[in-house]
Length: 240
Image (cartoon, rainbow, N blue to C red; front, side):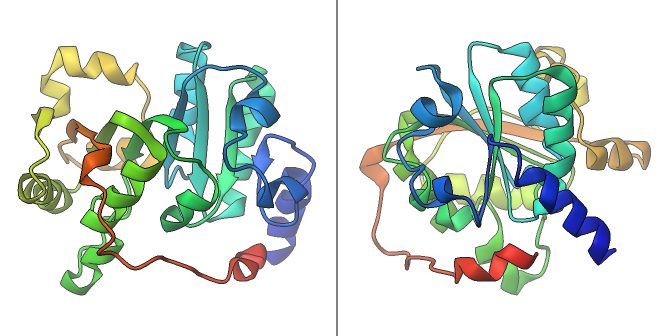
């Protein structure tokens, strides 16, 4: 298994659109994604905890006039997504290997236009609430890198996580533009997903789970300094 991972890492190190530890660009990409990676001025859309990057690559095909960046901490997952980029010749898709709480290190204020959070780890234990990608401290970080009134789309098969997210949004006084506990019964909302499904979505829908979805916007005026800065040792992720 370790040997297979090393082979995948060797491949991703050769792909310039994968920004990861060990590459010079990893320390200098902040604020320069359009210039150094995409070579255009198009909007930037992030897929957080992207896994194999099904949405980054899928949306990249649908919207050639937008730039998509899949973000995950596991380098071997990005290898899968990068293979799709290679096979389909996508020039508007890139990947970043980092912790989600470290987004400020890699994106400048307002550099991002939109964020997708698709089937993240639900972190069901009560003590893990701060690790959920819709916890207030994550929302605070998203505000910093999004343009003002930037759009966030959230999709999950886990009803508990969805209910938690709606509670957080209500407490933070963030209205949802749309929300549904059964996306597949909402044809107009389904159009926003263009038939793209992650492997987890295929698995859980086959087991009878409903898919939940909402979208909302974040504003710069609501940025707060009450959440501590996350500062993991980045050198630790090079072997993951």
